[in-house]
Length: 124
Image (tube, rainbow, N blue to C red):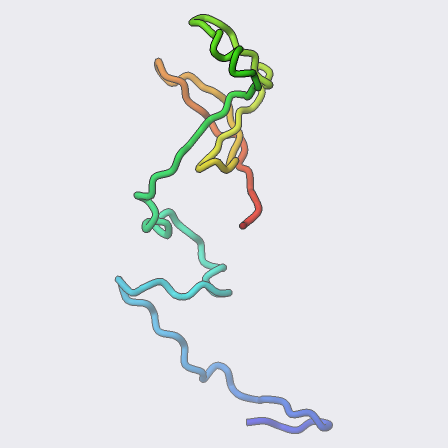
């Protein structure tokens, strides 16, 4: 139904009478991404399809450049100077993409990394 007001058509449809979408049954595929989906909280189970995908993770303590001749001269016990200072954050790469920074920690008799900053990159 519409009503004319000063040369404009105004739609007076009662939106409360419109049919509401049905609730999804268990096992149904998720609804398409859109404005409504953006408002719903996301959980880890939303990523279940990619849980078994292997990724390569590297925690980079530092870098240096050297010539092959110098590399071949290295012996056990030699020290290689890196471009980082003690206590400076290390870079954490996933599949060669910088995703976080962190600190080296000791967990029992093994080294570990604690993430201290997540890097939000550009979407490609």
